[in-house]
Amino acid sequence: MIYLSDLYQKIQEQSEQFFPSFQVSEFSEISQSLQQQFDLLVKQKQLGLPIKSLLASNPLLADWMAQLEQLIPGLFKPNKKLYLDYPLTVKLLVNKKYCHWLQVPVNLAIIRNRIRLLKWAIRSPKLNWQDRIKLWVTCEFLKLNPNELAITICAFYPNKLPKKVIFNWNEKEHKKTQKFLQTLLSDRFVSSSNHSLKANSFPSYSLNLDEIPEVSI
Image (cartoon, rainbow, N blue to C red; front, side, top):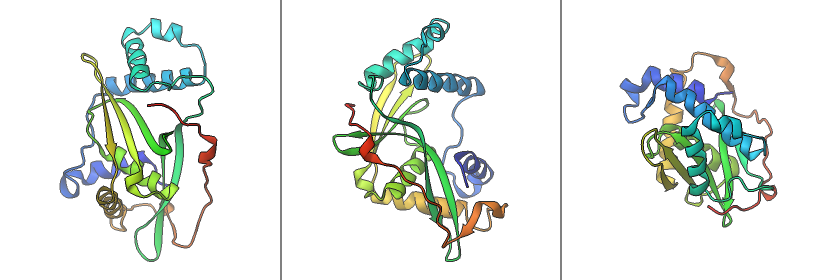
């Protein structure tokens, strides 16, 4: 199985020579730690766990949580079954003989009968390589037309208001991302055969979208 961390390492190794348009890192380790705390708070609140003491100890995160609720209304309403960090797994065929299995975590919701991915992070509001891979994997997993998928990105900053942007996926970007993955994970870049399986090997994964209620965003 190949995860985002594996892809991150491959991109770092090859970005300058093969993938100059894919930005790898934007923020410091301090920002990454803050992002982890932010994600944890969102999950805890979604589960109905107490977070008051955590918010009281970090006013910045308290502000972000309030702003996130304004940007994505209904995110924290009780009995709303959203898939947070839900792992989606798909097959990527790199040649006629071998394939790789990719697994990425996504925040998934249904808005007006349309699948949408959600992302809140300390970052630029521009679409990055992780977003593209998550969109590609979601399309492949759910067998969606790329034009049927979108992602809502809420970009947060330590010293200014957050920005919400919605990106609609499309066939051109879908094919471009698939080609990027195939190049990145072709035989000359793969150092471990543990990530590869025969092309006719098919692990079974499923997701019942009928169980997900619609949310207003």
